[in-house]
Image 1 (tube, one colour):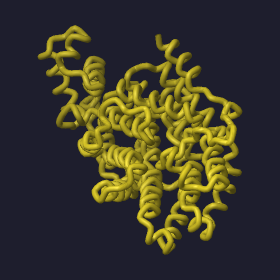
Image 2 (cartoon, rainbow, N blue to C red):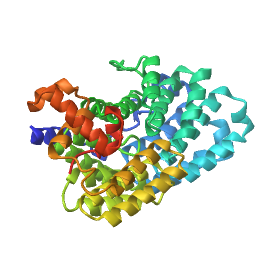
Image 3 (cartoon, rainbow, N blue to C red):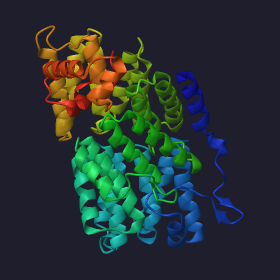
Length: 438
């Protein structure tokens, strides 16, 4: 079954760059995905010639090829006169910079737009600018700033075109901060918790955000479903660049949590191929992180070290903290306590710089467990099995039925797990346990 999963997934998601259709077919614009703007919207907002140029920019970024060339081509629409005349092409060009991992350039562009009277006095353009600032902040690890900006946008109301993207990015920011209840409430308030309308704008981003929320809550199967659905939506628009949404690597972690190891490795390795084709260090680092954890063999530490090196080239970000954490905990499990502690200390420093209290607490708990007397914090095989089943969302009664124990015995083992891990209950298992047992 696992082998079938791997074969089916790699067959389903592989799209060659030369399969992308031309932008103009019989005089009509092809179905290029433009975040934050509906298809009917961008056809009416831009003149035909400018529309073709703007979609060409974003289409090549979506194809994930010629990363250096895309960066150079993104600069021209960022000229001050061009951004006044054509704000929506400026929006697309700045997104392309974010896809390329050039956060400094994107931030500089946002700063210039804040000072531009043409943008300052236009509500639609201010909406686009706030989204760009929030997205740049989130990708650079400033999740609190991103959440505050996006919450403000929701509270004051916005255009229909930007609403879904705002909700999706806000949920992602809240998940990064560990505020899962608030993220779930945003999802419910937006009526996006159930089946989604196929015509919903930015459906891929909503699915990715839902997947992140499920993943953080230990609902791995739901996370996999949403990430796979996200990939299917992107495939229909020929978006193969993982810099847009790294759905494969995120689904890989969900597959690890669900113990579908072949699927996890297939997804991670396929994303790494696409990330190397695009060439952004951040994208390659994110993919290598997933590959390193998914391999679960003697090469994992070296792959994770390469991921950390690449992610360190950018600004402090959540992906960097996560990679450092997984590398550190893996080294500790393999008896390299000194190396593991060093990586966890580094992760704690980055989390402090990002003002991410959620990750600071998670790393502190890991370091506390490391300092506990030998034998006091190590879970038995039975405790580990029960802990991971509880982490995956199974009730005590379900766990008892699955491993042929009484409910009282499951409760006894869970109490021991909580004591050894210095946590107060089931929900904290999500942060106290690594993605998969060693």
